[in-house]
Image 1 (cartoon, rainbow, N blue to C red):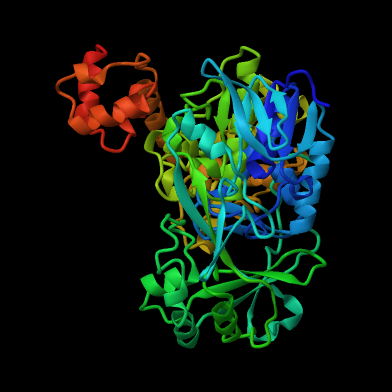
Image 2: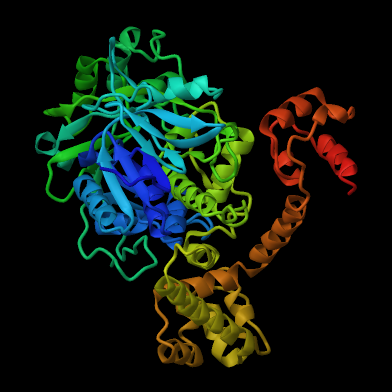
Amino acid sequence: MFANEYDVIVVGAGHAGSEAAAAAANLGSRTLLVTMNLQHIAQMSCNPAMGGIAKGQIVREIDAMGGYSGIVSDKSAIQFKMLNKSKGPAMWSPRVQSDRMRFAETWRLLLEQTPNLDFYQEMVVGLLVENDRVVGVKTSLGLSIKGKSVVLTNGTFLNGLIHIGEKQFGGGRAGEKAATGITEVLVTLGFEAGRMKTGTPPRVDGRSLDFSKMSIQPGDDEPQKFSFSDETAPLLEQKPCHMSHTSPLVHDLLREGFDRSPMFNGSIKSLGPRYCPSIEDKINRFADKERHQLFVEPEGWNTVEYYINGFSTSLPEDIQYKALKACDGFENVKFFRPGYAIEYDYFPPTQLEHTLETKLVSGLYFAGQINGTTGYEEAASQGMIAGINAHLKVHGKAPFILKRDEAYIGVLIDDLITKGTKEPYRMFTSRAEYRTLLRQDNADFRLTPKSFEIGLASEKRMKAMERKYSKSDGFIQFFKDSSVTPEIINPILESKQSALVKQGDKLFKFFSRPNITMADMCQIKEVEQYVNLHELDHESLEQTEIQVKYAGYIEKEKANADKLNRLEGIKIPDNFDYTRLKSLSFEAVEKLSKIKPKTVSQASRISGVSPNDISVLLVYMGR
């Protein structure tokens, strides 16, 4: 029925579990993916979209390493947008609106075509642990499945409790039962557990909406794609979203149900995502706002189901219906299902190593919402890292860890295990101190070589990245080496109201001016000839422009990162006794003893550890 013993067992087949299973299997581990329902692999439980601010960078990073999220997103996309184009390239973030059914189907088919990967449908209710090491899992039918490592990616299913008004019922997602047993086993093993909350809006029948009363939200005129590979192509046709708004009347109707709201009557005690609040939370916290945006998002190419982004709620269904009917375009709305909130168990991530392996049980890894994160992208990236490290550990190889200056994924994991989280953690560009280095456009330059080295990114990907790098690097060098006369450059500068020059200079210097674009430079015959001769595509041109214009910022951030990495090199011995250092603050001793940082740099990022505490550590370490 099963292999005698799997190298990696992945529990849960959401975004984290799917990436974990794909990574471990593609690296060569005998892998088993166990889930409660094989028909629900990689479900988009909430909004039908991938990417967005900072999240788009994460999807690009997953793709650069050979994960599947970018490819699946491209193949199931119905609209593409590059967000924040009015800002600098460090802020640009790709996002796709997805066909929900096609997304899940594409994921399942990709996984089924992955060698070394077995599937099994059943609930895992326990772990097999011997001498503080995981050796397998136990299912609800009483089966014991042997495994050298286990990755838990349980999402919102651990003792999940769904709230709609005064009504409560067990479930991990609408129409699906909760998972039981694992929390109790982990607590018995010594793990600390907590509760979190998230929510989702009503789904409605698009045939009942009047889109003429809403503003249209089209995709980009020239859509790009997520994946760096040639397996996917940009969209030729796109489906629009629409936007409506709430109003003071809508807010009054919603307030009528506040006394029946689990948010306000004490039924829900756990914290929800601060940056994706429910509609009742929004009108309560921002009472001065007369209206809030509602994004009306199609669930796919052919379905009539729509997702009302911005209207997450756990209010009674009659209140939801009455309030939504008062929004422009929703006068005749028909519900597919009401919105709801869900509470679930999570495990504070300070109990993990940077590899996402637990500190208490060897070979056991946590990834996704079990670690207190929210979002498909955050979950998928953790799943990939956990799958990689489970494989590497089983095969006696060095762990794979991304640093904060190498990837948003590195920032995410370091934040989780160093600072922990008491509310659902969501990635933002502001969390990354080196965001000029961690752009979405250069994820393949940063990560494909690292992934290729461990055997995950393919040789084909590596060669494609090298060709792309060579093209942009060569073009940058061309700008540095080539000069231009005032007669040629001044008309371009004048058209952009930029200061004219009296003598020639290198093209690089003129191109560095903030208001001079690649299109301007291509008016120069020598530049145009270089582009045509080397057949430079959009990616190469964009990469060159970014590298030229932001050269100073990039070098400055690299220098800052190098300083930080010197502290990364100062290791702290395992089980170091911080109570011996009398000059450390009481809070620092408490936090350092609990989190057990591996390096002085990690210690410096722990909340409550002051610069003075770090100085004490450095003195002790002989620096």
